[in-house]
Amino acid sequence: MLRLKLHWQILIALLLAVIAGSLAGADAGVFGVRYVQIFDLFGTLFMNALKLVIVPLILSSVITGIAAVGKSRDFGRLGFKTFLYYVSTSLIAIVIGLALVNWIEPGLVDGAPARDHIGLSGDTAEIAARAEAHDSGELADVFLRLVPPNIVAAAAQGEMLGLIVFSLLFGYFATRIAEPYAGYVQGFWKGVFEIMVLITEWVMKFAPLGVFALVAKVVATTGLRAVEPLLAFFLTVVAGLAVHFLIVLPTLLLLVARVNPLRHYQAMAPALLTAFSTASSSATLPVTLECVERRAGVSHRTTSFVIPLGGSINMDGTGLYECAAALFIAQAYGVDLSTGQQFTVVLLALLTSVGVAGIPAASLVAIAIILSAVGLPLEAVGLILAIDRPLDMCRTAVNVYSDSCCAVIVGATEGETEILKG
Ligand code: ASP
Image 1 (cartoon, rainbow, N blue to C red):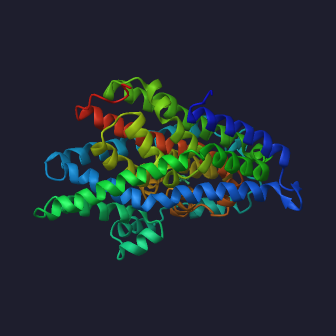
Image 2: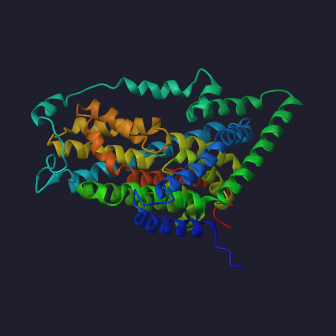
Image 3: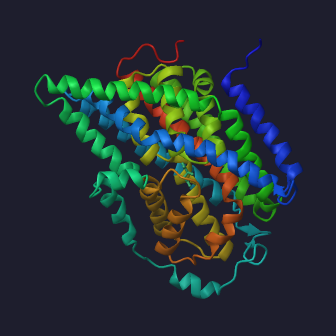
């Protein structure tokens, strides 16, 4: 029997979902149950199943990965390369957003601020006056989350950053204890990791169904009409994401890792489609790990360090979106941001993209932080809320893709020869 590859199955599910979602709409149903509710049920089931594996998978993957490097001096080098990649690609993405919004000016209609067209209220002069240097204390939160006071609570609340830091420490010190305990501990976590990989592979068999349900629900409830008034902004963000996804990252793969970017897209297809459908890089994490290690052939040592950490702190698409959204809102209000203020936006987009959780719509909180830092009204967040979901799907795919490129680049520069060879 002809058996389609998983990413084709998911892609077909996605297309069918667009058709089914538009046909179903928000209200149609069968036997008194709305189709949207049915989509919601299956979509949530799939999301739950992905989330279910996250905590044990992250723990076991990071612990076993770090235990493999923990004894050598490689640890520092691996960390340095990874952070260098995270910061530079996020910054490039944010600057792309900045440049495109300044160039396309989606916040202006016929040269005038679009505020009335898109239903923004508030006195421009007053808003402009407020747009002076403000500070944002919330940034300290990012650092606080690195060290959660209770690891069980952190795991229960999906505080990935804390969980990862704990796993890094655990893995590192697991290599510092004496035998036979070191062997026992490492063997145990290796076993847990293998089991979690099998469970993930099993869950992914249901991906086409899950993706269908998730996307059909979005199409049925949001529809494509919500995009219309903000079309210029929508297209600006999509163009920026496309530049990063189709030009910047593949160029890095080609120049630094010397691998074929097309093969990497192919290897990452299931993860990209899952990220797109779930709009959550955390929920996609199990699939990303699987694709990077098993399909792209990056070593476990590199994958287990780069991917969980990247999933939590490296969000290029999110940074680009935050910067573009803040500048768009300023434009739409007719507030001219000085170079210094634009710099503040870039810096805050970089820092908050680190702190944003890998869940749907998480950027909105970060955008609110940026807006208040430059003194713009928060009500504008409500405006972009209407079109946030489709953009979230796109930026999450870019977030996940960037992490995977980091793994390939770090792996290749560490001398791994099996990457994208299969
Ligand atoms: N949904 C994004 C993610 O999970 C975060 C965001 O930009 O809202 O990667």
